[in-house]
Image (cartoon, rainbow, N blue to C red; front, side):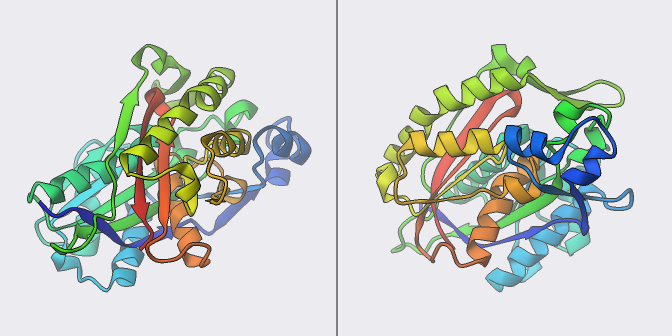
Length: 315
């Protein structure tokens, strides 16, 4: 079967910006403390009247407009999120209703920070199998809803936002634009990143996540490139989950992508969980830092200590 490709991307962030100085008025922290430990300067926060599906719908609408595709042409919606408060209707169905998509298949994927790359692989597989012809793949999270704003170890990290991609079948003579996925997890370390309790709250074992990400993920990212028939030196860009600048920069260096632009959106957006990869990718495209057809490594990791990556061609 023909492969799939990303036709366009889009992103959305709420208007409210929370600076490090603002946080210093809430908890015992400072701009210097935050920058030196996680590299974040600002993050965007959604208000009480901005639910996850609204963030997702804004990003998806931008992606559809950029692709020049009518909403009625979408037959699959996959939303990656871990911050859906209500269980049903799911976020994908809510987004479909907001955008007037007709009657697409609609499903949510909860793999936390690796959610978007899992969702992208799911859509790619559906298109390759002939089960869908055009999909909306969205990563959207409202981390502010699950954050303890008195806990300085976590509240300095998070932000809200959404990113989306229009995925569609390639022409029969066209090279696939989404490479094979490499995915997996470390179930026995699932306790390292959690959103649990009533009300649900985000917590993590920062040092465990840092050691795992910086030591275990580089060979997995290189193997992802091998599956796409490339070397890391062939990459034009590397878009990793935007967890922490102290994780992103060493990880990108250890992958060996010496010629690649490295997404550092965490500085301005914080950790937006499932939104972070598509949000960062969309900004690179919007700013013209990568060009149509460029090979880009996407690699999500984190919650559940799950990971998923693929090499895609820039839309």
